[in-house]
Image (cartoon, rainbow, N blue to C red; front, side, top):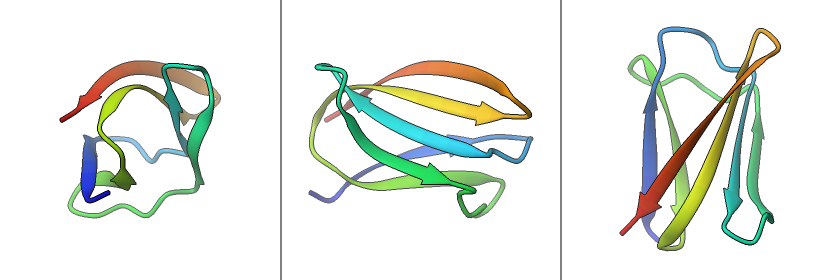
Length: 67
């Protein structure tokens, strides 16, 4: 797996969770490292995912397709 997802965020994220279409947590990254005003989730198999981003006790859900 060499696919990755880049997330640009103005605010510091507390957690990034990558969930597959079956609802399984593929990756859970607490206090992710910021790189160039964003974050990267790596080693993702291709497919359709839900990305759950948490910051300041608020959660945003994004749908992601990895080709």
